[in-house]
Image 1 (cartoon, rainbow, N blue to C red):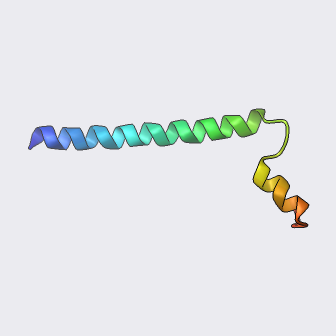
Image 2 (tube, one colour):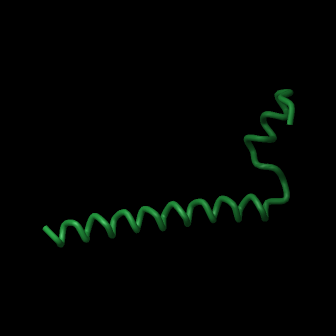
Length: 50
């Protein structure tokens, strides 16, 4: 039982770190990208307001 609980906790920790990594990488890629992202550019081309 304790092993199962510890395993579950470690899984949640891994998920947390993966989420943090994805968040950080997306923020970094947006920060260092000179052009706006594709979705925003596509919306402005279709005539949506900024």
